[in-house]
Image 1 (spheres, helix red, strand yellow):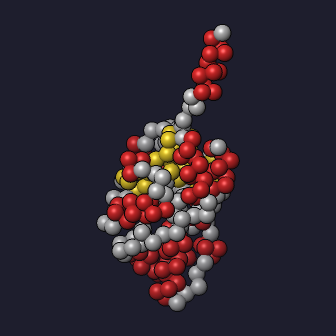
Image 2 (cartoon, rainbow, N blue to C red):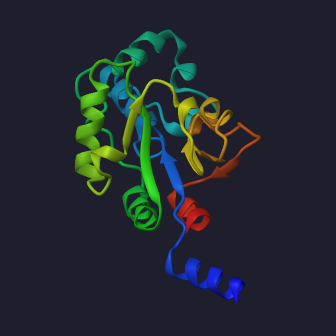
Image 3 (cartoon, one colour):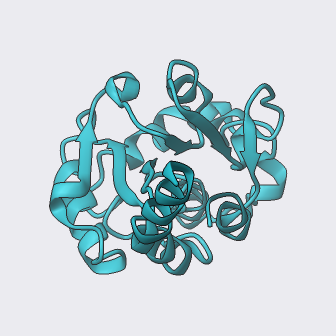
Length: 188
């Protein structure tokens, strides 16, 4: 009888996970934005394929400072493109689980405001109360963290999912998601 009551309870009251999702290179194409700005500024033809396995600046080390300055340019974070399928899949996940956007936003002066505006436009179903724009993600406690940076996943006490980005294709030791369809299959 007790077992049947427990099954009934779980069937009626779905257990919701707490899922943290990074923004840059998980929801937003920051990597591609660096390449686009660089190509436009220098009339170059740099591609993501040429940068696989590292940071953009590693292909053009003489322009490292130029690429770093992109973060300080007004509109950089506001104008990012959402990654394919991110909105649809995250909206579906948010309908079943408690979702928080957890993104570093304190290092660059315009990023905090621009990230809020970007989320309002592209992910309006994520309420402002579910946005953690922070400096350090090691404080996060929940069930799942999806991030493209292994240093953010290392200390997370729940399920860590490394979202594939050109810079992390050689990173090992974490469960990996290749794209948002892969995230769908893992969490839904």
